[in-house]
Image 1 (cartoon, rainbow, N blue to C red):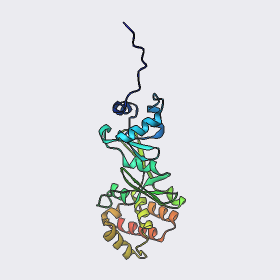
Image 2 (cartoon, rainbow, N blue to C red):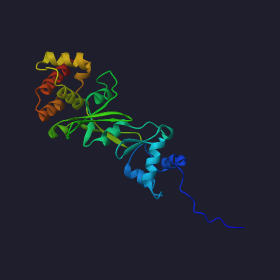
Image 3 (cartoon, rainbow, N blue to C red):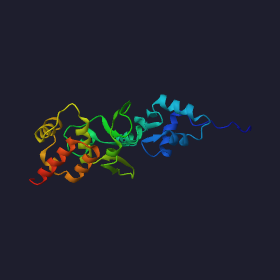
Amino acid sequence: MIEDRRIPQPMDVTRTGPSLRRLIPYEEFDYQALLAALSGYSRPRDKITDLLRKGTIIRVKKGLYVFGQDYRQGPFSREILANLICGPSYISLEYALHYHGLIPESVETVTSVTCGRSCRFRTPVGLFTYWSIPLQAFHAGMNRIELSDGRAFLMASPEKALADKLRSDRKTAIVTQKSLREYLADDLRVGIEQIARLDAAYMTEIGRRYQSRRIRLLSELIRRLSQTH
């Protein structure tokens, strides 16, 4: 009997998905994690091209991936992706306002702030936008939101998200308490009770860092409403 001395070939692409799932525990992963999982291949970059072509993995942007639909074990986190796509950044503006329950409409675009340049990324998993704010304002109001698997993403506090939105909306003239209340009620549809629950002192500090009259008006409104609700 002749012994078969043929060298076993690497696992073909149709079986690579399950193998990757054992080596990469999360739905979102970077290029280094992918290379490590494919270290058994002599040409891992060619394998990555194959995986992308087959839809086993999806490139969100260069160096950042999620698993394709057939290999997902659960939904990927758009919040974590937002932090990774452009940094330093954290989620704020409309997306954070809806997350915190301040505005009723759901928001498809994941909106963030950054101390870098304003930019946007249209990806296979959605649109991600980043609005540039001054460095002194960037470090105020950033919270760490824990996920059930122990990971976390960065998001603005309710006060900071509202301040960022107010500061970014330059098309609306807001110079009085009356015009501010109309903007909050008509444009954002934020309820008076929700405004009253915000922290006036915290908003004052955010306004100081922004050097913004609009945000000072907002902190005064919060203080007045908190005394009557």
